[in-house]
Length: 349
Image (cartoon, rainbow, N blue to C red; front, side):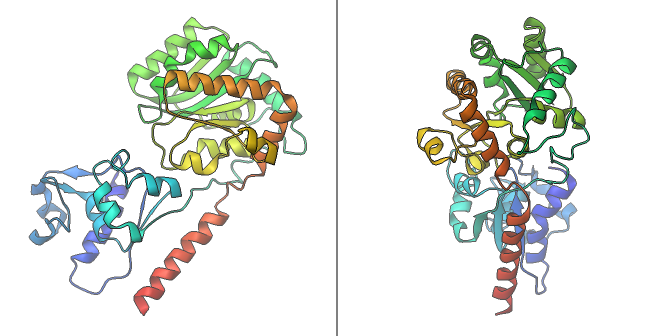
């Protein structure tokens, strides 16, 4: 946990044990995996009274649980997507806190994240080789060839180009993507990756790029202009997370007309409409969703994506639906405002 994270997590605890009337508190959880656990002898250094170390306070399996204390004592708890709010009440995704979250279910809700649609706007993005919008998608072709040239990929308009902008970690399913590269090879597709994380995964993607010149490119680190160029240039963005509180890269992908290929978890399933037969018939598909997360499962999802890509009419329709999705903060902001107003009214009653 960063300093501001643990301060936020403990805010309801300090207010509860402060001994004076307190305002209502809302704790928003991004990723339940990062909890802030420390030895119990740190209690005095935090300035908390001894009785705060209790089952209904910060005690957590014999340690100090910063996030656990906040979850126990906040008046309202939110997560960054509705589906993640449901998932974390299960043993599979609850990270040891599912029992507490089931107990506090009445106070728990999910509100989707958004992105800054002024910063992430293909019509005005200064990082792009050519700007474009939903009325003229020809600019995506220019951005694809520019990205291929920059990353040393074969400049081939017909080759499906998959992209990744991610931390390279177990959570993000990076190991499964690495194992699924033979399936991508068999499809004649390309991969452009920008990210950093676990050293073994970084090395694995660098080795894969060396073994597949012109077909796989891996840029280790984070490069903001390149991230924009990737969203504008790839045909599809792969987000194979094992769990995902919300996810932002798939929101950027929707905004830029890059079709998200995502696992059916957390906020990914709240933000992407799978292009299955019924969704396509209804004109609603914006991406490809799959599960479970295995190399074979991801390989099949990549294959389905390529089949959709080969039907240019269907693909364009999916791009237009994706770009029409509201990924801004407008709706989430209204929901947060309503939550705070409701809490204020409840405490004033």
